[in-house]
Amino acid sequence: MSNDKIFAMPFAKVFPLLIAKAERKGRIRIEVYEVTTWLTGYTPDQLNALLASDADYGTFLKGMPCPNENRRKITGSVCGVKLAEIDDPLMLELRYLDKLVDELAKGKPMEKILRK
Image (cartoon, rainbow, N blue to C red; front, side, top):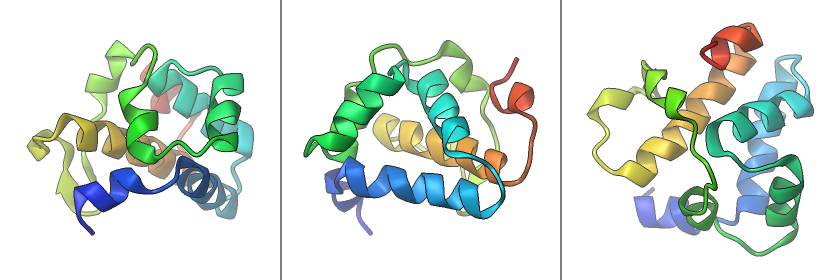
């Protein structure tokens, strides 16, 4: 799937998939909200407004009100792609969120996920 297609996907379709992934592994919806708000600076109310709108994933990522500086501490790989090798800044933000949800689903403690 090309980057353009990923960024054009409705946020209201993508975010529930992230929640479902975490819930399948015994985590809860509020934890997905927590890692998302930590990463992006969106409030839960702002996330809910985006979910109720027709915003696409690219708009969600480009509109992050206050990206967390500690997100740069997120390392490793997602879907076989090393985060350090991603050149596209928007794709990197997308992969950061994927990585946080992966860590959540793997049972990591929230303190470690949020790089505290």
